[in-house]
Image (cartoon, rainbow, N blue to C red; front, side, top):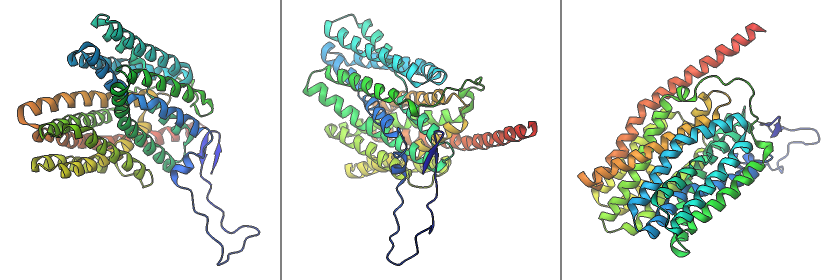
Length: 432
């Protein structure tokens, strides 16, 4: 394996060779695994370390803000409204931040945007502590909407390094999905411990410190940063992604609704204290499946979504049967089914997004997921109140089945994209 011009080139091992003779006693050298080959690339460990440090707080900020505001202002309604405002602001601001990252580079945009977001978190702490008017909490938390999409930037670096090596790129996308799940599994736990065992503001304070430190380490790795293209940017990522955004929206519906349905069902069963453990089991299943999927041949998006739809019926069946053990196993399997969908769908985003606008395209995908999570949480809450928690499990199953047409349309998009690429290549040859 060598690196030429920032691109990974897999060199097959030599067979035989001068000075070597086949013999019975000679041991075959074991080929390194896909993840070991990834982190043998120069600079990959550095930007991955910064990426993980900066990504962990993404699972901390929301719950830290809720716990801090609820403790100091004695109002969960205010806490929920503040965090919802922050999510809405992020949905608007994040694509513009990503567009600037594509145009001017990671270091020039992501670091100033991070500083603004960290200042927003510090202002939120100050306003909560000093008893400032409620509107200052909304304004402070809205400032955190400039938070760069660190997962998208990390995926963009892998795409730059692994251009021309689809198998290695598949492994990298699987690793990134596993990292997402790991950080979103550990982040809330760390935030809850800090806010309850230390002081209410500790979760937000530690999250801001980790975020800034990780982003400094990440942006310092200039050798792996994708070069900024000076060519005119043609095509809209919003138009190019099309049905994929519907797929990500439906996937977000799955995530948001299954979480609320699980919490409500366990609470109604008198097992509310086990909610965190059960949800962590689901995230752990997705993390493990993501790493395993990276070592396997990628499947079609339609097959992955079909498997997800089938697995999402299992929690409803387990909840209807009233078995906590069966529910835990069903959520583990459902979590394992989400990773291949996300890995394959994100790879499709890379394939169809116009050149020079990759961060913007991935941020649009994340925005669609966040929108789906918000809608899924609200819909599951209404379903729990009207029909009961077990029935609410039908919502994530329905959302997964609704994602199937989007997956099929995404396959057609890929064929169209491949056809357009061939036509452009042939046209370029004709001109020369």
